[in-house]
Length: 320
Length: 320
Image (cartoon, rainbow over all chains, first blue to last red; front, side, top):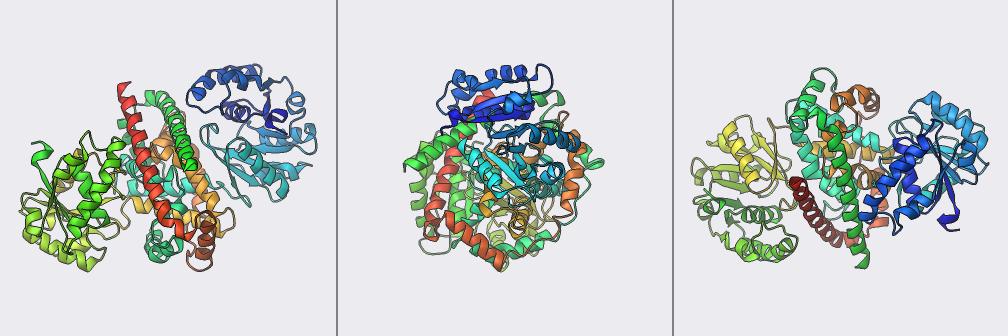
C-alpha cells in the first residue's frame, strides 16, 4: 500500500500539530486535521499553504508541488472525521498531564482498535497519561524537535505497557516520511534529547557561574566548534573517529580524563537569580529583546538551508 | 601592518602543527615551520601542498591561490630561524607535560621578549608547563579543534600569571586569521569544549548503560536533532529563542525540569568493561574497523562542505 492510500490524523493544530501535518502530507499520507478550537484547522491550513513554497524552493517536498501537498490535507470538524480510516494519530494538545489524560481517553474511544495513538509531548512520560486508558497498549510518545519537517529526529518512547509492535510500527511510519526515529526501549524523564541538552546546559551554566567564560564564549565553543561535527555525526561516531582503533580505543585513552572532570560536574549551579540576570544581559548584548522574533525566523531559514545542504551531501555520498 | 609583513612560528609539524600552518598562511601571515625530526618540515609542506587545492575549490583560501599560500611557508632548519621575527609561536609537540616543560623553556630562551608562546595542548593546563619559565607571563594555551582551517573555535586559556595583554593579543591574532577565540578568563581541566563534550558523553554512556537507547539512537538524537541548530547557534542562543521572552524566561520555565533531571545525572557510569564492549560492537555494525580511515576522510570532506555552506549563509545574512 503506498502512502497515498494511508491516512494519519493530527489532533491539535497549534505550532506542533501543523508542523506534523506538513511532515506527514509531504511524506505522501492523507492527513485529517482536527482541533476543538473554532477556526484552528483552517488557520493551520492557511499557515501550511504559506510555508510550502519555501520548502519546495529548497527541494524539501519530495518532488511534490505545494498544491499536491495541500490536496492531502483534510479539514475535519470532528475527531471522528479526522480519525476515520487513520492508522495513526499524532496528538499535539496542551503540555498538561490532565489535558493529555482526557484527550487520550477520548482518542482511545474514537479510534479503531488497531490505530496507534502517539503524543508529541516533550516532557510528560507516556505512563503518566495512558495508564488508565483501556487501549493503553497502543499509546506512546513520538516527540519531535520543532519543526519536524526540518529536523528529522523523533523520540519514540513506550510506556511500560506499550506493545513492542506499536513501537516498531511507529518507527517504520516515521522512517516512511523521512524522519529518523530514536527507538527508546523504555521511558525516562527528558527522554534522550532533553537529557543530553540538559547535561550540556548544566555545564554551560556552571562555566559561566564560575567565571571561566562568557555565554558568548560558550556559544562559540559549540557553534564554531563541537556543533560542526555534531550536525552530521553523533557523539559516538565522533569519538569512534577520534582514536586510531575506534571507540574502545578512545575509551581506553580518555575515560580517565573525562572521569576526573565528571567529579567537578556533579552539582548543578542554580540558574535563577544572579546567574539568570548575567546570562540574560550577556545575550541582550548580541540580540535585543525586540529582535527575538526576527532571529527565530532567521533560525528557521538557516535550518532549512542546512537541510538542503545536507540532502545534497547525502546524495553525493550515495553516488560514490 | 598587513598580515603579509607579520610572521608566526609553528613549532612541531605533526597533524596539528601543519593544520595551524595552513590556517596562519591562509590568513596572510608568513609562517616559519620547525620540527626537530629529520624531514618533518618538508613532509608537512608536501602535505599542505596536497590539501590546498581542495580548500581553494571550496572557496576557503580567502581568495588566494594554493601557490600564494605555499609562498608564505618558510621551511626552517632551526628553532632560531623559525622564531626570527615571529610575533607569536604555536607549539604543537607531544601531549606530555615533561616534553612541554622542556619545549617552553627552550622557546622562552629563543623568542624575542614580546613574542607570545602558545601551546596547542588539548588537556594540559597552561600552569602545568609554564610555571618555571622566566617569561611565563607570555605563555598560554591556544587549543584548536582539528583541523583549525575547517573548525574556527580556538580556546585561549591563560595561566594564573599570563598577562591579560598577551591573552587579548592572542584573541586578536586568531580573529585576524578568521578563527573564533573562546576567551577563557582562567584555566580549568578540559577547558570549555572538552568539558561540554564530557558532560554530554557521560549522559550518552549513561543512557546506553541503562538500556534506554542504543549508541545509534543517541547519535541520531544529536546528528538529526540537537546538532542541527548547534551547528549555527550555541546552546545559550538556542534557549534564548526557545521561550517567548528570551533566556531568562526559558530559565524560569524549565530550570525545574532540568534540575530534577540533573539529580539522576550526577554519577558517571564506568565506560570500560561491558559498556565499552557494547558500544564498540554497536558502532561496528555501522562502520567496520577497516573503514575507520576512509570514514575520517569522509568526515573531513563533510566539514569542508559544511564550512563552504556556512560561509555562503553568512554572506547572505550580511547582505540583508
